[in-house]
Length: 110
Image 1 (cartoon, one colour):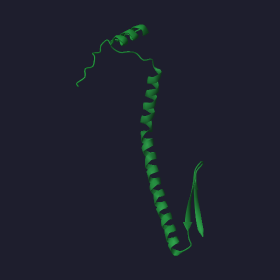
Image 2 (cartoon, helix red, strand yellow):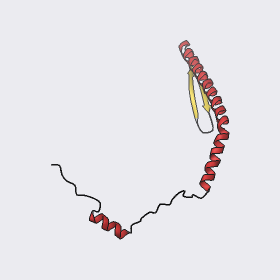
Image 3 (tube, one colour):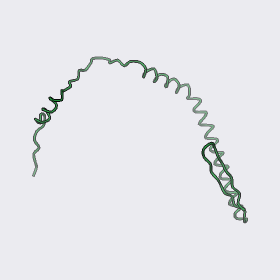
Image 4 (cartoon, helix red, strand yellow):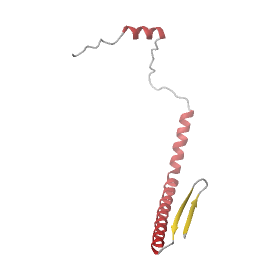
């Protein structure tokens, strides 16, 4: 015979099979469940520690999130001197590109 352990949450499910046909199968099944129980206990300990760290850091994260939200909502102002930007009109861009302005012809080293 085979025993199936189903572990499920809201959207996912796993099935673990445990054989009990022979002494060897029983020994393997007991080993499987012992390893699973140890892994779950270790996971639980890690989850408790992670929750503790999160709670300890939660006020700092909240402050940082509120600061970031305020920064995004406030208008941006330039500090110091303003830099002007020269924008070429389409006709000027084409003529400077066609003339090769600022570029020297390539020479072959052959």
